[in-house]
Length: 432
Image (cartoon, rainbow, N blue to C red; front, side):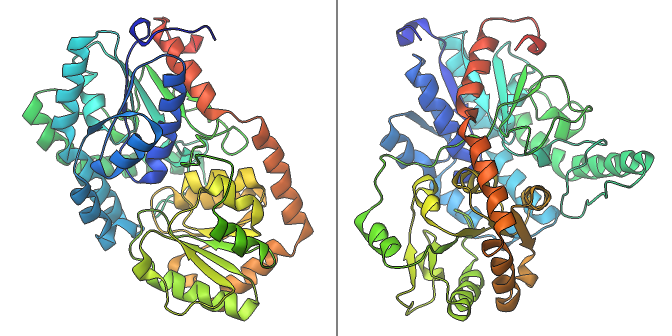
């Protein structure tokens, strides 16, 4: 691509909302767009200021790191019910005024501004109803797209594929109505402060930009349903995980070289309620004789006196670690999932909430994973599931097949191509 100056390219404002798994794909997109000559600003919670500085992206704080920590401490965040959704939406709605004011300010400075936002960046979607800004929504998982044809498997909304179409349509109508009644008032409350309207239509349809919505997963993971809007474009996984070089730290490398490939256990980057998960996981390692790596930045969750066969690390880029491991045990987040697919190893998912139930179902259908709920995460069950995954050649072969598929997957690049095509003032997203 020819060299260009940042002055000749429209500025990009990235607005993800959520944990590291939600923010990382935006960082990947931002770095690629910056490489292509755009001035990129990452506008998200202060928790990620350090990450932006490390990779060289301009940063604007939307919500404090203290508020992020407060939300992660809420045990309702990880419950498979409307409670978890209300926690997430409540945090996201509070920063609507900040988002709207920032977009207005940046748009006044340069009318070419492109806002690339997550679905929970409600301020971006609201202001796009009143200002002629270019607005792109980035969706990371297929579970967020309501569909009668291929309904996602959600907590409390598990529609069998064999159920009649009229029934699926009726259940979705009820689910969308209940979701709207519970969640739209939270958005309306803060939207009034900046006088930029309210959601028009069902929330789970409205939060997608009709200009362009990027679905950051490949079609082999979730094929397009016929009842998805035309403006939804599949890209591939948004693979990015803070890896800054190709070398693992000496401490990690020493542990990996000391014995058979370990199993990695991680409950999610924002999960501070995982003490029981690690306690059970340690017993699984002891009873099975498998080595283990425990990943969490919250070290107080880790059992004391780990044996030599189990090691704890605060953070290791999964793209560098997983190719040296035998399996991944985790919460089913889409970012972690994509890295395990790329590494070609089996998945054991302890699904907690949000999109994790649907992600786990898709892994099971692909033949590369098994799943359970937290109450089913027992020593005997997990040991047996790991045996079924790691010791079965058919499972391992299927994992390697997906890894081959992933070699041609460039979700970040495709997403950036589509964002730049939108900037070319194409009449409809059918041309993108």
